[in-house]
Structure formats: C-alpha cells, structure tokens
Length: 56
Image (cartoon, rainbow, N blue to C red; front, side, top):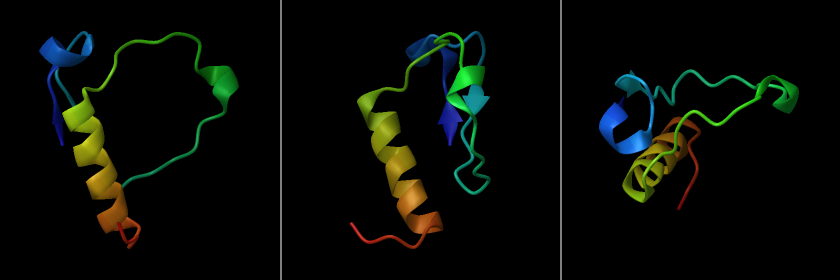
C-alpha cells in the first residue's frame, strides 16, 4: 500500500506491507513521525484481515 508523505507527515513517500508483520517493543518507539488518514487505516485493516484470514 502506497503511503504519501503529503498526507501523513512523513518525510518521504512510503510503502506499508501488511504481508510482512513484525512486533516491536514500545520502548523503541520514542517519537511520532506521522499519522495515517482514516482511509489509509481502513485499507490497512482490510489488508491485514485478508493476510490473516480474518472475517469482518
């Protein structure tokens, strides 16, 4: 999923890949660098449901 820097506050355009999930300890998350739009969150959730074979 393409993530535009223009709408998220990120420094550059990025890609969100829901098929490569990892866990990160909260201690490593020191500052907020951007924010997904509501539409992007919906698309990400739909992708996660598909990859994880979850029902709506």
